[in-house]
Image 1 (tube, rainbow, N blue to C red):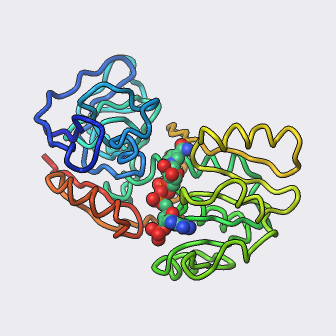
Image 2: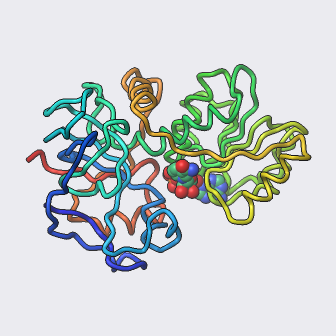
Length: 311
Ligand SMILES: NC(=O)c1ccc[n+]([C@@H]2O[C@H](COP(=O)([O-])OP(=O)(O)OC[C@H]3O[C@@H](n4cnc5c(N)ncnc54)[C@H](OP(=O)(O)O)[C@@H]3O)[C@@H](O)[C@H]2O)c1
C-alpha cells in the first residue's frame, strides 16, 4: 500500500511515498481503508523535528493524525463497529491507503458528511471541544479567538457563538466574510489592527496563531480573565501554571480528546449545519509535496485534505 513517510527530520525533500505492508492490528483495533486524511500543523512540526517527544526518533515515520474511511477488518473484542462501516477518527500514520485505528478513537461518519469533511474533524474539533471544558463560555462571555478561521478556530468560533458568547474573531482579510457569516460580534484583520488596541476587555483569550504570547494575551484580559493556549511551551507553560497560584488572571492549555463520544457530537454539529467545515484544497496522495509546500505557505483558508481512491 502507499504510505506517506519522512526518512529524516527536515524539509519537504525528506517526504516520500513508500510502498509499505498493510499494518497489523490487534484487540480493540480496526483496519480502515482510508478515503481522506487531513493535514495539521503538527505534521510539519513533526517532520521538522520540533515534536520529538511526541514523534520519537525512529525512522521512517508515517504522517497524518486524522482520517476518514471504510472499515476493512475488525480486531478481537471490537464491539461497536463492523466491516463496511464508514468512520472517521484520530490515528497516527493515516496518510496511507490503510490505517490501524483504536475503537475508542473513531466514530461513525454521518451519511450527509463527506469523507473529506469528516477527515477534518478529529484533531481540531476535539481540541476545540477541550476549550469548552477548560473555559466557561456561555451567554455574554467576551471571547477573543486569535486564528478564528484555522482548523481549531473554525470549530471554536462557531460553537462559542452558538453558546451566546460575544466573539471577537482575529483573522486575515480572506477570513473576514467567513467569521461574519458565523455571527461574531467583531471581525478583526490582524494585518490592519494591533491586538493591543482591543483590550483589556475579554473574559477569555484563545490563542491559535503560534504568535501571541501569554504576556501579550493577558494584557487583553479582564482582571479575572483566562488565557487559553493551544500549544505547550517549555517557557510559557511553567510560567502560566505558576502564575495561576497567585494571579486572578489564569492560564490554561487545550488538549485533544478524540474519543467516540466527542467525535460523534462534533460530526452531528457538522451534519446539522451548526459547524461549517472549510476545505481550502484537496490533493491526491501523489501530490504530497505540493500539498505540504502550499499549505505551509499559508495559501489556503481552511483545512487541506488528501483524498484517496475508493479501491
Ligand atoms: N493542544 C493540542 O492538542 C493541539 C491540537 C491540534 C493543534 N494544536 C496547535 O494549535 C495551533 C492551531 O492549530 P490549527 O490546526 O487551528 O492551525 P491552523 O489551521 O494553521 O490555523 C492557524 C490560524 O492562525 C492564523 N494566523 C496566522 N498568523 C496570525 C497572526 N499573526 N495573528 C492572528 N492569527 C494568525 C491563520 O490565519 P491565516 O491563515 O488567514 O493567516 C490561521 O487561521 C497550532 O499551533 C497547532 O499545532 C494543538
